Image (cartoon, rainbow, N blue to C red; front, side, top):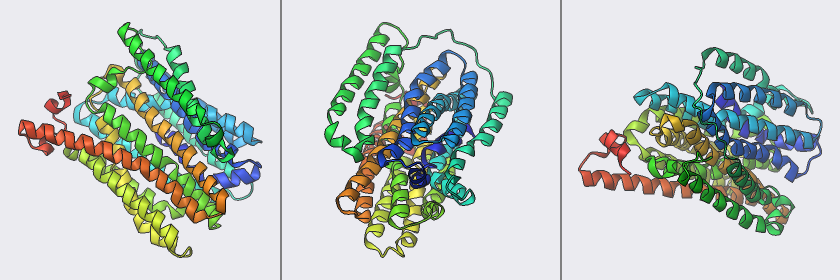
Length: 471
């Protein structure tokens, strides 16, 4: 419940952005912060939260963060101005970021062997489905809560669900013992946070000329992140607990590749729903509900495939994500072509089966990738590993939700061509997905070569103990 709710809030706001912009008299750059700010603060909290969960008490941090999420959701719904809404969204994202890594860490703590794989399958399905059904859920809420203030129920709906989740969490979640290792890497937090902010700010300000006038911040951000990596390595050399242990990426089989695949995929995937909402509502005059229904085939396909894929990952391994990424690229690429070339009155209908194909592919990406990435992580590093993995996904989502709508507005400003703006934004998203496919394909081929050299059937050893130790 908590994981679904926090991740749903990344995309559920997409269909409400035009209404929020109109009712709160916001600029395009301001309204982008409603989504990008949430994703950014979500991402910034993850690694720190995972580290604190490992060192202190995962259950307590989870319940405190969940309570904060409920409180800030109510604050978002009551916000009288765009400035206060953005501030409340930043706080809401921060609470979600402290909550999320405890989800995956508790799974690793409570389950072993095949049970852990099935549990991660359900968790991965939750991640994939929550991201895909956001536009439909947002459109349905706006249809039921009609009127100029109806958008506020996008946030208010979290309150009763969140309260129920808190009560269930207090009753069902196991208590954990303190490890006694409570060191917090404050310099690492500052370097990581400032580096990400420097990279993000020009993207969020793209509609206001941020890409041209603030390009130098990309260099500053890259330098800060490089300094962050060096600082983490220095802490490991001193036998001091870092914020993000580099050994996760060098000693845990599949972790580095899985984190890279997830980050690149979410760069291309997350911003797509904002672009669709802007195109359908501003370009074609659709209502929020109709806009959400237009992308429902993707959500249906993703939901169907995610549950099944969680059971198939042990058999097919990385091949499953390779096929899934290929399906997403074909589905979204075909949708872009249809919306560009087909008559506007029939294009959304023609795009429905192609979007469904893309959804089937997406369901085979997120769930299996999470399972393969986290399965071999030691329990003592579970929180940090889950936080780092989701940090990559959330940073990718923050970049995507800033860059793709930003490009949409830039192209639209040069010719008022909604179709051209849509194709440009979606094509940029497909570049991120293609990079994710290239990395997943490389890993799959590497595994096949390693298995062939041992003379073993790939399907039988995709995740055998010998394979897990191979590095």
